[in-house]
Length: 318
Image (cartoon, rainbow, N blue to C red; front, side, top):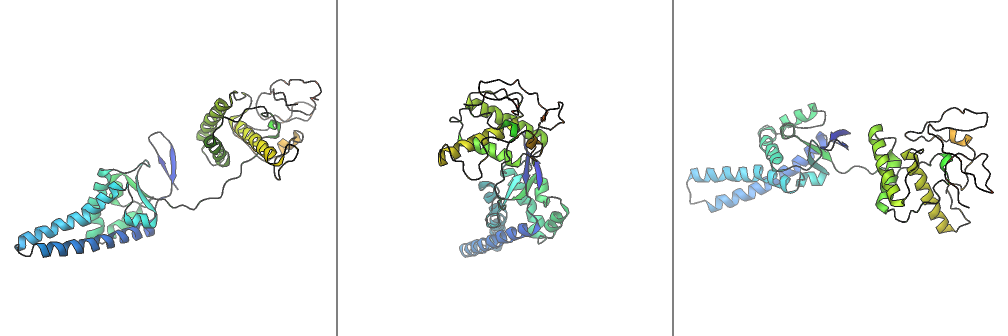
């Protein structure tokens, strides 16, 4: 992988194209360009048979520049870095910051490509690509571009880890009807990749998603719950509601989380960690688990025992 930093200071993980795939794409482009150049040359010679040698030579040079130099520049500019060979192999030319290339980038690449590809039969381009850490040739270095792979094997969908047990059922009274599907998808993608993200980037993303989710539900996110754990708990609550809706109120779906979690001791052995949630040693003789956050006062409710129930500050539904 190669990390490219955009203008918004966002690190992009792009896979640079290596020499074999780039050589294959250049070969396809050259074959197409040579075929077009031969056809244009034959047409020019037939049309300029009555002209002198100097005029025919000038027309041949113009056809060479038009087809073998101007053609690739125009194609990369109009297709935003995807020539016919790159389209067949699955490559694309992008800027160093990951954005689409423009005419000046394609012009520099095409002009230097005449020297390092056409005049040296690709020897200079191969050496530069092998020396470069990201497989760039001289045209890419001077133009500030990079050839990346677009066809990347799709990884299997990640597993969404469950929230800490002490959050089970805490958000059962939230109104989730106004949350759009796009936000649910973004939350699930974060939860499946939160341990692969940079800590600062992941923390900022979790806070933003938690704020958006709280705005859609109409209830502010609890201050004593880290954003990552809050997102996981709300996603679990949505899954529980969908399972009850699909299988009936009294029947749980296979693999669905239990309605009542075991005691706090299970939380210490769950194996899942969220940013800002760190188990600590119990401070009282009674078995309890602290996740590095301040516990809200327990709200007593008639008929509901408080022993063995973690402090949440939310009244469980009847």
